[in-house]
Image (tube, rainbow, N blue to C red; front, side, top):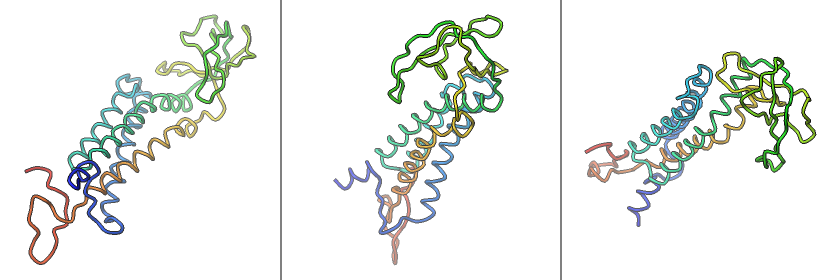
Length: 229
């Protein structure tokens, strides 16, 4: 049972608080992991590289963080939790990155509503509506707008729509608080959870004595298990 617990959750062979350097290593790994996941997605949205903007590169970064935890012999359960949190952050990042790009270089124009349809129920429990719109030249937009589209909206009404001048990001309706901080706010919880999970996984790799080496005479051998051999 002790061996199984060590394999699943890590040895964590310390009394009291864990070593400060191990905490720092875990926090650094979590920050680097979350930073690269969000950073690569944001770079893809800004430059128009679909392979980065759609979150695929973020998933690769989450996998790299999981491989690092495997290399330091973290507990398998914690590796799985961190990998899951990293993938969730990577899947949430594209929408946030698009919001950041539109907040930085987007151009707001007025569009005319041509039709309104029910879009089901939003995540906050309210009814969502989808507006088909056309620009001031009468050209229909390829996407339907839900931000700013209400149940009281009728064909012929004007709707504020923000465009990306470079065409990398699809247009979307203007909503209050949609600046850079507002766009990234939804990622904060996932990023913090990823840092906490990475820190816990790294901290629990601490061993007083390695099972691969006999304790040194006159003292204890404080280390992680060797990475190979």
